[in-house]
Length: 80
Image 1 (cartoon, rainbow, N blue to C red):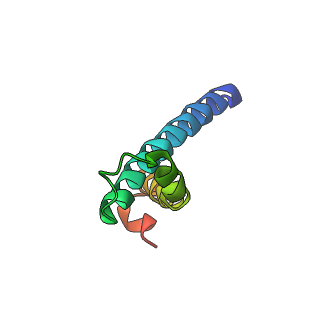
Image 2 (cartoon, one colour):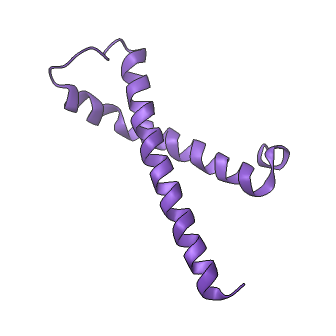
């Protein structure tokens, strides 16, 4: 495989990973707010989402990394 093909594939993979992390961060933020019973609060919603975004993003990166490892090495190998 040529180097340019590898570079293109890496860019597509990076874009996919970035999109996956953003999607998971959004879902995790909503789950955290729901877990604390704050999901129905409309006043200061942006502030609440901002407050939980960092832990939600950290967890999203962990999940996305594990998902990539499973895709590359298989479920049994990724668990170690």
